Structures are given as structure tokens and as C-alpha cells.
Image (spheres, rainbow, N blue to C red):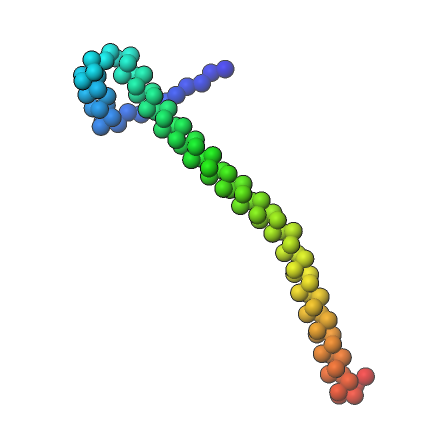
Length: 100
């Protein structure tokens, strides 16, 4: 199994790491480890954000799924009510005009 971590260092970040190296008398390896720790913190933060976003999406999908169960029932009920009302009015109309 192979994996890799690709990062890009901006100029400002490089200056910060060089200043840390000078202030704390760090070696190149220590600076690289500090940089990787910072990158991992960013990656983990993004992973947590995406986990929360996925959880919200899943919750919304569940609510829509429940709504799809009840909307057809409501639509059929409205359709039947409209049909019976229309039939009753047509029957009354034909009776008033003495067509039946």
C-alpha cells in the first residue's frame, strides 16, 4: 500500500517556519516535523468539517425520504376529493337543467 502527502508552502509560511527555527534553535528535521503537524491539523479540521457536512446531508436525505412517503398520499386524497366534488356539482347541474 502506497500513500503520500503533498503540501505546498506559501512564502509567509516559510518565513514563519524559518523564524521558529532561529528562535528555538531547531534543526531542519524538527522544522519539517512542525510543518507536517500543522498540515495534519489543517487536514483533520477539514475532515471534521466534511464529516459534519455529510451528517447534515444524510439527515436532510432522511427527511426527504420520509416526505416522499406522505406526499403521494396527500396528492391522491386531494385528487379524490376534487373528483367527488366535481362529480357532485356536475350531477346537480344536470338535474337542475333536467338533462337527467
